[in-house]
View 1 (cartoon, one colour):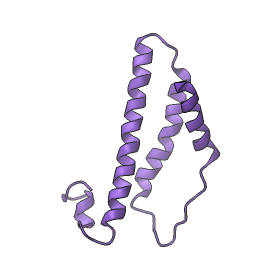
View 2 (view 1 turned 120 degrees about the horizontal axis):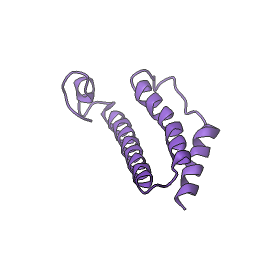
View 3 (view 1 turned 90 degrees about the vertical axis):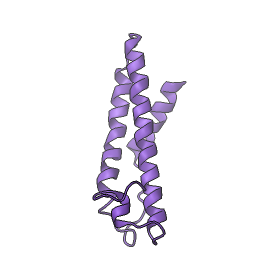
View 4 (view 1 turned 45 degrees about the vertical axis):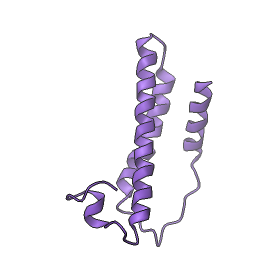
Length: 104
């Protein structure tokens, strides 16, 4: 969790509270996803600088960005009591497979 200022995690979710662990896990998951996205952007930029065709990688990264944006928006609207995990969509699984294949 970051900060206790207005609109920061700690302003509503006090350390040691019942939800603090869940809030920290959500924060870390979103931060890891952001970090991975930035690394992918950097890798694509490097490939482009070396005059490689990166169109497919750019498209895959754009597809991966949509769930990341949705997750950020949903973090304060979801009810843990009433929500159930959704099965992974075919598109997100396919995107991960495509990225792994491109790395090889």
